[in-house]
Amino acid sequence: MSATETVVITFGLDETEFEDEERLRFAKKLLPLMRKECDAVERVERAEDLNPEAGSKPGIATLIGLLTAEVGLDSIKEFIGFLGDRMGDQPMTVTVGEVTITARSRHELEQLEPMALRLLDAQRQPQGEAKNV
Image (tube, rainbow, N blue to C red; front, side):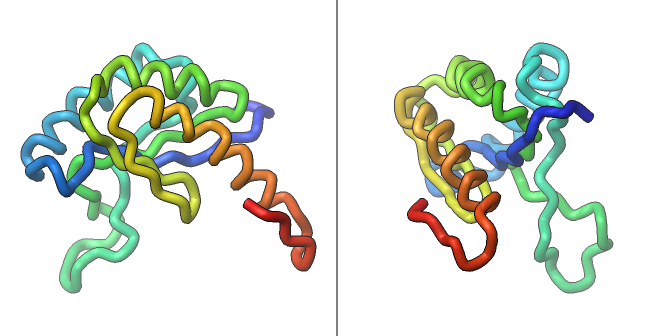
């Protein structure tokens, strides 16, 4: 793993506008591309379902059409560019920590960088020294 701090970003096509099959197809196409062509990504996998349905096998439940990428802080712009080039104007849901945005364009997707940096800055603050995020 690199010495650079990383941020975990979960993303996929917006579930309110796309059927599961379309979202899954998009994620299956994007996953190998990110692994091979996107230097900004240290690791990318299908997003795990942290709250699987009762009776599912633990450790193998994934969320339909969502990917989770580990991106170096110094590579967020490159990641956004890569993702923006491939999403076109398709609405995407992007989650960093507890914050989720829906981006309908590359310009809206660019809001991810300051959001991620503020979130990480807030996490670095000692307990009791909360800062506005």
